[in-house]
Amino acid sequence: MANSDCVGCGKPFTEVARSREHILPEWLAIEVEQPDLSLNQYRHNEDKVEDELLRSHDLGSFVIKNVCGDCNNGWMSRLEGRAKPMLLELMNMRASLLQLSGDQRTTLSAWAIKTAFMIASAQQSITDIPWHLFRQLGEEPERVPRECIVLAAQLQFLPKGFLYACPTDILPGSGRPTQIRLGFSIDHLHFVVVIPQFLAERVVRTSGVHVPIWPLDMEIRVVYENFPTLTSPADLINFLVGLVSAGIVSSRE
Ligand SMILES: [Zn+2]
Image (cartoon, rainbow, N blue to C red):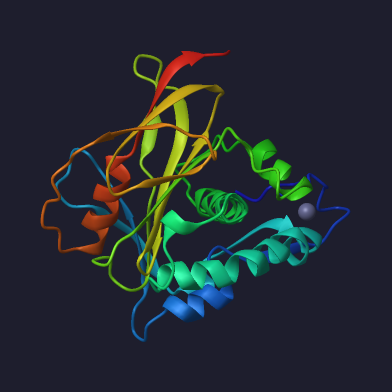
């Protein structure tokens, strides 16, 4: 999984120094980490009742090494700094997603997309990651790729801590991966980010719990879904990500 070039700027690691990037930034890991709680990584298997536990580790060691020091300490760190106050307010339910300005939604989306790329790159099951969209964020973090979709929710019943799930979306018939659909939650704040693996018009459908955040003019279809009583955090995050679907209308390729 070790890239030969930095995924944030495209420069080869023969020219720039490789650095350790925390998938969940350290300030946030401290915020959500609880003693004796480790991060359990599950793979959801449609054929099995139980989710398979892949590995268990603490958030501090959830790192990847595919970005250079310039990106890590430069644009990625500045983006963290801009998003941090808003994230803290939202995850502690002191601010509402419904009251964000366009600029705030743009910053929040840039942060959620960056984090989703980092989580995706730590998954062995995901191979086709469209890093050009990530580099676009690096060149100009305010120009968030319109191809990526961000939905969010604030849910009181989410357990404290960090959860994530990334089911694979395959184009029926071809077996081709269509998009990375990644859900994660930090305390009460929950995101689903859709990163397209090829360009196409997509129709996003979800239940009423998710608020469309990015693109700013996104239209979604909302359907009512009953919430089952879920007790395990793995079931909860899988259920929430499963509520969101992004169907391909027509392919531009
Ligand atoms: Zn770089």
